[in-house]
Image (cartoon, rainbow, N blue to C red; front, side, top):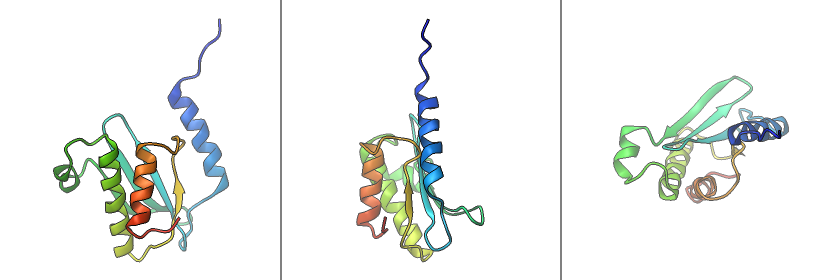
Length: 122
């Protein structure tokens, strides 16, 4: 009998392959994105030092208050603008985009486009 690999395991394998290609440096940190069924999370990470420089998620009270739903494309776009504003305040303008093994489509694409429009370069 053929056993089908779970979607989460497939995503984790894709993410490992992606992470082999690039890392976040102090000059150009990594914008890591994760989405669950109910929320989205984005953080900017310096992999050399192992520090999270900036983080935002739809779980935060001020972000959640602005949104009708926390798991749709509009929420992802709003989160993209929030993470970009926080990064620019910290002096980060260039990042490497880590889609976390997710397909660059829908929510992930909306977050990336909104972050680019708000001023992040990647």
